Length: 125
Image 1: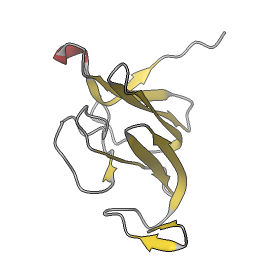
Image 2 (image 1 turned 45 degrees about the vertical axis):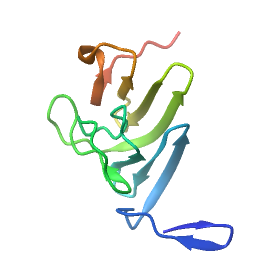
Image 3 (image 1 turned 90 degrees about the horizontal axis):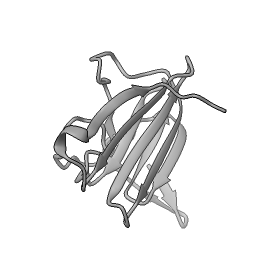
Image 4 (image 1 turned 120 degrees about the vertical axis):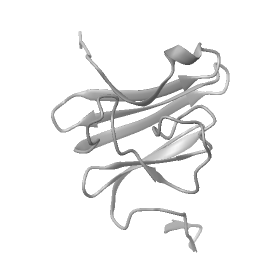
């Protein structure tokens, strides 16, 4: 349930305990109290992290990464995107400090799309 202007709005598949929320131009993501990521969007660019472009009702749990491992222990999530470039991404930081991104750019070749969480090595200068 979400509260907007004093009214309660039910949103399908919302976990019972939410620790953090992020919203972007084309979707939203949240972290539940167990460190799991849930995404909500139209998924036209794979922004739900499910490995497909299928529509889903409400929030969908991001369950595995590109390695096939359970995707959990997330401490921060950010939705980003721009209508100009037709690209949308969701990034997550896990408790071990690793950064994970799932992204789809409509103007990319299909082989360049990463619709499930993939690990990125980040170098901070």
